[in-house]
Image (cartoon, rainbow, N blue to C red; front, side):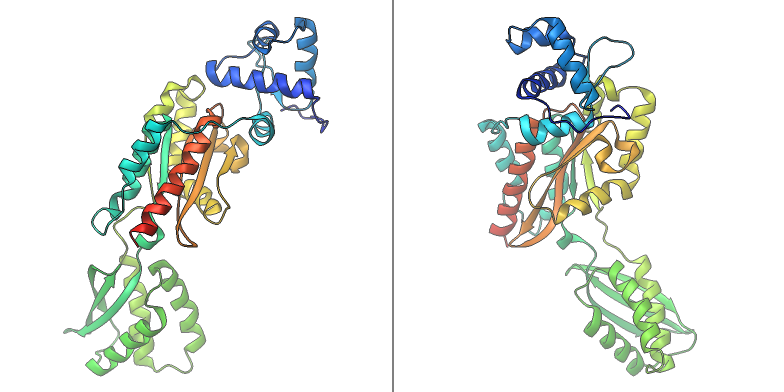
Length: 353
């Protein structure tokens, strides 16, 4: 995008030529020249007229001219105009729908822990991009119950029940010995106030609540609850925050295949906060979200677009799925696939609820 891009709205003819140019660039991945655009457009316009329109679109920040070519390529802003105003979406093919339905099925207690892996792999295969799926929030580390048993040498065994079935044991070292009654009182306090919440949330709330209740809580309780807070730092769900599949598909795109770009891109996959932030920003969105290039807010993804959609049980959003690919991805095909996959996954969770 030029530094002084104007905010002028393209004429109807310019919008048409912009759409044709972007469609060509998405297919071929090479800068589009005036003669090619004149031929593809089907308009009886001279290459000189086409060049003037392309120059206007460049002034508006919708196209840019690579130094090595006389042709033009879309900018993120150009793609945004294309996606919002010019693109015609394509309904997913019947065979893609059947594959999605077959793979998703109906999540059960045995299969739901693997649903993120299945869906991310499936999205990757159908779109030929990288599929990403956040693990359903119902599968995060939720505390169901905690119990304390006294051991010797000022030690306490903490038994944590996580996500209904998963049991984890932690040995806590306290400042003094505690009676069974004191341990039961502390366990009842935690279960009453924090059961049903995510462990990370509980850890933060315990820190705040201990400060607020310090004056009204006896030292034994303070000691036990404070140590229990530390124990929860070591307890977690064994499931990841999200799953990425098909990263190697991105090697098929020339603009992403050089070493420096690939290194930055795979850094983005390994730096969990980048992907998690995008997924978190999408979970309460209404329908599909499209982050084009710099719109993600992360320079590491400037050469990519991310298409996401939340999935839910009833009205409760429990996760986000999507794809990551180059900015020249086939939005007209990819966006409906992401949308229908989220709908199918939501329906599957609701039918199995």
